[in-house]
Image 1 (cartoon, rainbow, N blue to C red):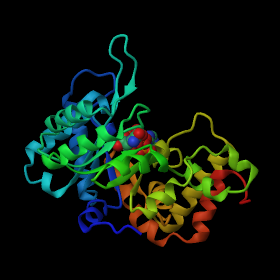
Image 2: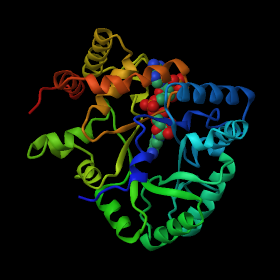
Image 3: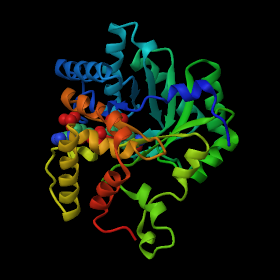
Length: 325
Ligand SMILES: NC(=O)c1ccc[n+]([C@@H]2O[C@H](COP(=O)([O-])OP(=O)(O)OC[C@H]3O[C@@H](n4cnc5c(N)ncnc54)[C@H](OP(=O)(O)O)[C@@H]3O)[C@@H](O)[C@H]2O)c1
């Protein structure tokens, strides 16, 4: 098995990541307001107070304003940058005039995106850069060249991907000298395909599972850190009302809240603890800006450690809405 260099292991050893997509105001806003700044300040403070020291961005979040507001916080606290792990993503481009939304892994676009990210974040380097969504026109040689230049210039220390399958990662890795150390995917108690894919091997109903073949196993074997986006399922089991509550959603909500009460913890901690209890050591990327919810999420580290197999399967079968095959 490939051994991960020490530096790489350290960089992803935070059990929770704070997802910054909620910072920077509304998607359709045009500039940062004082209120956006205060929201960001309180959210980042809550994350740090609860030992969450890794932050996930993307150049597109709020059209750059998530990074801009975070950059202001970094500027005001010069010691902070060295204490945190800063990750951002590039590769998605919004529509411009007649040109539609698209993905762009060209060397030119990757290099210019990183310059924009660093400027907005008011920092000299990113700890990790992810490619946001697979670009069908990807030329791996171009990505490899961009990564080498970024690494050599000190602008980016490590590289990874998001929403990629095992074959795409293998193709890209074959060209890159830099190891790909992260893959960020949607995984949660509501988005179960990452578990169902393995459970339903050789079962007819497995045909309906929409998840990349062998991606969890590939990442585990290659020491690629799996990160889960939308891990709270937008609060579906921890307080937000569902517009379309199915029996499975209601049963899962009940199971989550009963377990939270029994353990004296929050519903968020159970929802995230369920993800983190999996031996793949998934890192949830939490997107709430609410300081109370951030604190609740932090309790998941302990809940993941103490969750029994029976509790894990109780939550899983409630969410899949039927018994195991
Ligand atoms: N790689 C990718 O393609 C990709 C895609 C999407 C997201 N991401 C990353 O993943 C992070 C998390 O994703 P996410 O924010 O979409 O999902 P999430 O963490 O599952 O959910 C957070 C959202 O749910 C709301 N929420 C949570 N609990 C709630 C409750 N009890 N009542 C009402 N609302 C509640 C939050 O609102 P409040 O803020 O008001 O709590 C927030 O809007 C993002 O910040 C981003 O960094 C990556």
